[in-house]
Each structure stands twice: as C-alpha cells, then as structure tokens.
Image 1 (cartoon, helix red, strand yellow):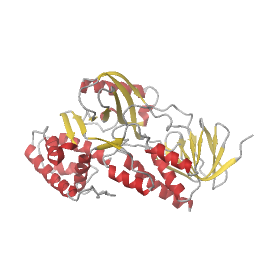
Image 2 (cartoon, rainbow, N blue to C red):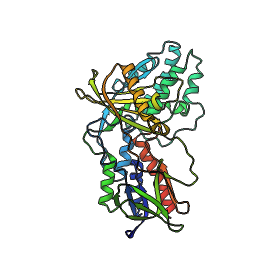
Image 3 (tube, helix red, strand yellow):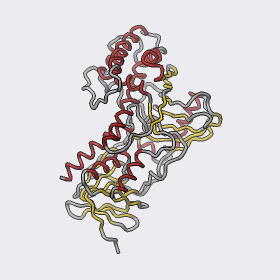
Image 4 (cartoon, rainbow, N blue to C red):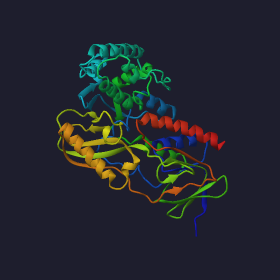
Length: 416
C-alpha cells in the first residue's frame, strides 16, 4: 500500500545552489517548501581537493557578500588567489592582481608585438576608466550591462592593427572568466568592469569551510522546510490540473502545487527540445611531482579557431605546496558526457596538460555522477517550472545566486 501523500505548495527536485537559494527565498516568503533529493550531492563532496576555478568562486565577492547579508547569512569566508596563468597559442600570460593597474596593463600587452603601440593606447584608455572606477574606494556592484552597440571585439578590429585575433581571444578569455560572456557579447563601455574585478582577484571558499549550498540546506531544515532523501525518484504523476505527485523509490508520495526541476536529462518538460547543454565539469588530479611555485589558477585555450568549450577552455587550480592535488574544469557539452565520450575528453585534457605545461600527472579522474535511471516525462497538465542547472558556461557563484533570485520571483508570482 502506498504511503499517504504529503502535500506541499512547492517541491524542488535535486536542487543545486541556485535551486536551494530559491527554495530559501520562497520559504522565507511564507511558501510551504519541500526538497526531494536523490543526488545527495551535499554528502558526496570530495575532500581536500581545491574548489574549481572559476565556477565555484567569483571575481566579485563583494556582491556575493551583499546577497548573503540581505538574506540573513554571514558573508562567506573567502580565500583570495591573485595569480592567473593564461596559456594561448601565442604563449603564456601571467596576471597578478597584486601588481595593480599598471602591472595588469603591462602583463596584458607584453606578448603582442604587432601593433603594440596602438594596443597600448587602447588599453591605456581602459585603464584610465578603471582607475576612475576604483577611485571611489569599494567596488560598486553593477546589476546590468549596457546593450551591445560596439563590442569589445569590434573595438579592437576598429584599430586596424595587424593580426588582431590573438589579442581579441585574450580579452574574450578575460570577459568569460569575470562576467560570463565573450568579447562579442560585451559592449566596450563595460570592459573596465572586467579589469576592475580582475584586480580584486578570484575568491573561492576557504579550505575546510562548508559550502554555501550546505549552509543553505541546514538553514532550510532548521526552519521547517521538508527535506527527504531518496535512492531515486520513480515517477512524477499528475492528479488534476493543480497538482503533481512525486513518487519515490521508497514508496513515499509528495504532492506539489508547483514542481521546480533543474534543466537536465532526467526530468523532461512537455514539448522541451533536445538541446546539448553546456555545463562545467570537474576532474580531480594528483601530480607525480608538483610543479614549483605558489598556489595558482590557470586557463588553457589551445585552438583559437574553435569555440571555448570542451577541451578548448580548460581551467585548473593548484593547491598550496607541497600538496600534490589539483582540480581541472571545463565547460562541456552534455552530448560529450555519454558513454565512453567522457573518457575520451578526460584523455584529451590530460594530454593537453602534459604537453603544454610538461606536468607529471599521476592520476586524473572525472566527477561525473552516476545515472539515476531513465528520463522522466513531467505531466503536461500540472504546473511545472524549470531553471538552468548550473554552473553553466561562464557562470560563477554570483550568477547562481542571481539566477535563484529571478527564479524565486517567478515562483512567487506563479503561486499567487
């Protein structure tokens, strides 16, 4: 016999950070919230490996702190890493945010010989804007970017320097890391924001601290939101036009006035198109012999003619010496995570790291969760809402929190 149905206004299935924060905001607004979790990702954290760069941190920590304070949480404890190594076909560029505005300008321009004086003039103009932006003291948050009239890429092309593409690719890499968009998607009037936040340095969770997702989950449970772990979700059924029922493999039944799911392969909305989503994937590795130097971050972009996805935008974070652990990340198309294709991408990334850096890698293992079963078609007659499961291409902690804020507003409007 089935268990009685536990009824809720709002049910989240397998929420990530954005989903948990949206659940918290909805619960705080008075909505009866439940979370059904078959992934148990909060219990499967891999200890002792560095948090992934850039997706699990941000170049904009002040804005994350503001969201935390406004939501009733203490700001996260950050670890700041100032050194970023960028490896392009033209060579390596080391950006150190401790070097200040002048040091940043010289590091960006140094590898480019053709049209150097023109490029330096363009950079000097952006540096002047950055200094003015920083002169007020604390970096001010900005909530929206300007509509693209002249993109960063078009601005460089307008200089008519010989071989502008390598410089554009460098700027494209920087804009992706900081703002999550490429050089053709960012208006040149906003580029000084990129430089200003690069000077802040990348901030990741401090070693040993719980992630903000774990803190959110603990707060939700303490404040009365229902949380249920289940080995798997067996089905989602419709009972009338205003309710869905989530059936767990343990026989439990949870009714939802509104069901909220991540956009992933397991839960399929009616009429949803089969799109290859790009998501950050992580690998954990160990060195046979750790490279010399301090803890640092890096990006490897080997092919200027390909899009910055899969094995063409590989980021890494190295632990403090003498620790031999490191974490590698890449924005990977979901179609490359099926079957043996993940092993192929892992082998390719390992080869690139060995070849470009001459690293001695003892092991490199992917962090792909096991399949939880066949896809589940969500009922077309009951209210369902989806959100991008993250982090997506270019996302960081701040973008996940902002996505949660937007999602909670959609939820509250729908509940009304």
